[in-house]
Image (cartoon, rainbow, N blue to C red; front, side, top):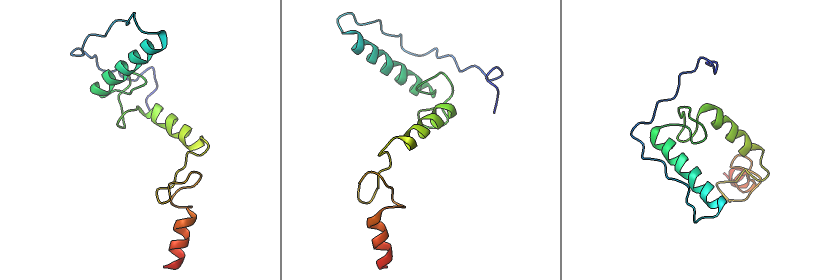
Amino acid sequence: MIPASLAPMPPVIEDAAPRPRRRRGLPQGVAHRLAVLAYQQRHLAAGLCMVCPRPAVSAHYCEHHRRRINAQRRTRPGALRCGACHERGHNRRTCPTLKAQRELQ
């Protein structure tokens, strides 16, 4: 892994559309959310992480944020969802419905 001090600078986005100014008629939270969405769309179009200006290694995130988000999803209660019975708290490997089906075979 390259130290942060030696990491190459992200590419400059020259062809990007001009950034919209703050919409004065909207409440503060709504204007902020629209600005966040515009930032994410700009970075996604340029192939950058949606959270920071680093190059994306997955569809939306750099390596740092991909690992961080995956760790959060694993530790969130009820995050595991079974693809077979769509119940929370277990996955396909530990699903009681699928275990019963495997035992019948």
